[in-house]
Amino acid sequence: MKLLIKDGFVISKSYFGNYDIEIINNKIVSVKKKIFPKKHKVIDAKNKIVIPGIIDAHVHFGLKGYGSKTLENFILGSKTALCNGITTVIDYVIPEKKENMIQALKRKLQEARKSFVDYTFHSQIVDFNKETPKQLKYIINSGIKSFKIFLPKTESWYIDNNKLYRILEELQKYKDVILEAHCEDSDIIEPIIKKLESKKKLDIKYFPLSRPSTAEHSAVKRFILYAKKFNTAIYIVHTSSKDAMKEIILWKKKKNKKFKLYAETCPQYLTFTDNVFKKNNNYLYTCCPAIKSFKDRKFLWESINNNFIDVIATDNCVFSKRDKFKNRNNFTKIPMGLPGTSILLRSVLSEGIKRKIYVKKLVELLTSNPAKIFGLYPKKGDFVKFQSDADVLIIKKTKEYFFRNCDAHTISDYSPYENMKYEYNIEKIIFKGKLVFDNNKLLLKNPKGIFLKR
Ligand SMILES: [Zn+2]
Image 1 (cartoon, helix red, strand yellow):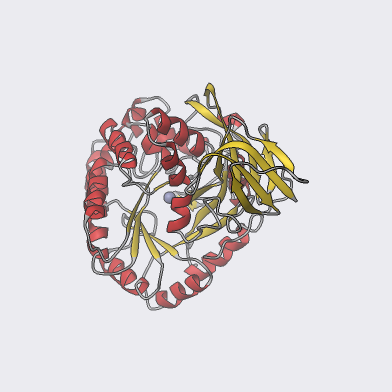
Image 2 (cartoon, protein in one colour):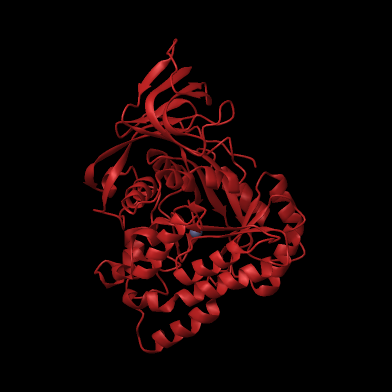
């Protein structure tokens, strides 16, 4: 099978300009100014933008938590991802009650078997006991090199300082392993919640008060201080505030660090401000960390512009509108998380370009950067001949349109982004060398995603 993508404007880590892309079977084999078709199926990409398939490095499919379960299982979640330009996802393996990390991984591999996109996992560490080192070794040998911990007391996932130290110490034994953390401090959050509770202020409009940026800042600082002692690379997921970001920048600027430090943010923190909590449907915007202020959002965009943010990923976590609505009067009970895969590409391109961020940088934040950080490069995230998989998006700039959740190929029954104005849309998606999405239609019947060992 030979495919030729003609005359597109190619944007990736390695290319920026008008190029033709030749694909044979499932690989990129050539990227040149002019390639003449010989027995190729030709796709005309004139006046279109051509980028590598997106890697969403932070998704939750089939998550059980907050007394609920996400609407999306792995199959449905990966289908929505594919239809919106994400050709690789990294989901989290979270041990459920009575499961250890190995059992959880086996379950998750089973759940992902019919994925529409390629996938790998971050393995969440929820405890550190005498079995943990053995389990970590097993996970790493299974081809997973990223781990995640929760620094706040969420569900049963809390990692205290003692465990944090031992996890970093243990992971240091392995090469190219990375530890991610959800950075918020319950020691700051809990007393505030107690106070709000005593005043009967648990309505969603008070939710942002309960998770101030201090909570994120303090945990980021603590995580970095502990990491300083070791060589393990660390990664801050879903950075939401200026204070936390400033702390990250401080460390990124330091020379001769033993450890690498990466920062991720998400579309919700780049799109909304805490004004959303004044709306009637404020319960649809509940995620952790909470969406912050105008100045925080502005600073996150500046940090992108100044290369201090490494990845934009979604933290996609689709609980039903009904489950959110049920708990709209009590933010301590509401399932936390927002849909994101359906808007990642359009929101990052539309909002980013509007804010004058260099488009190549935006593309790298969605493709080559996550690929490099998580050991998937150059198979994923770029157009490197004979090495990169032929996952290609053909995007058109359109006149402004209103985003509608019902057009986004998703099972989610709401989107916080409903009616957002965007200017970029996906026209065609090539996955593993085959045209799988065209003119807003999924052409793929049978899922073709595989587990990517790293
Ligand atoms: Zn998450």
